[in-house]
Image (tube, rainbow, N blue to C red; front, top):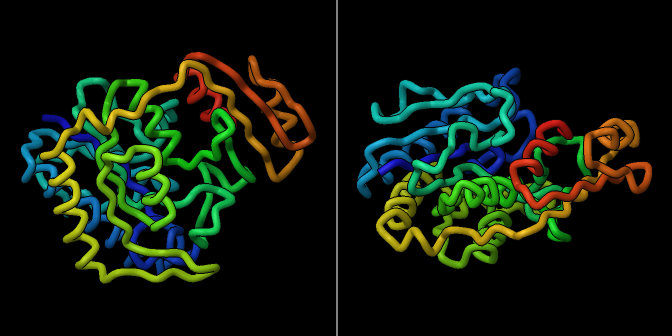
Length: 265
């Protein structure tokens, strides 16, 4: 059984400020180690549930945050960026039985994390079919496009609540809650323990119930902070700039949507 894991850092327990996510800042060292620990716990839980192969995508910033030496031997780690349209799930394909998301966070515009954003800091928000999109939603649809169920997510309470609303059967572990510009976090060891048991439960359960239905048509809207970015992406084939900071794109093929996102950010 093959399991794919996508890992970000803003939803790791304790992470509260942008400096703690920045590879160039010394204070990020501890939190990259905690990111590694939470990913390792997810891998251990997957192995306990019967996984024989695990692929992890380091999906934060440079893609060079996770300490590979602290992951189980069965893990293959995707570092850096292709760049590929699958973005944060680069390496995922239809041969996997499930995907899990570690360290994920609330979408741009949400009031549930001081680090809320979607894909790039230059976006005010992204909508897919009039639904505000998080990185979780974007990549759940990518998994669904490949017929792979989204089994598990850990991160802030805001993204966990969104995940349950989107996929009622999904297992979640909220390791923190955002309050204004602050966070309330659980202990680092408790986070790894809950993630380990949570992903094991998810894999032992009815994984097919976690396959997100894929819409037949996609209408995407991106609102940029700067008009120049909207102007530029307005030249993307099929895209339409509808006001100084807003661009729309439509397709029935979700891979084309992912390609549009890749060139937008």
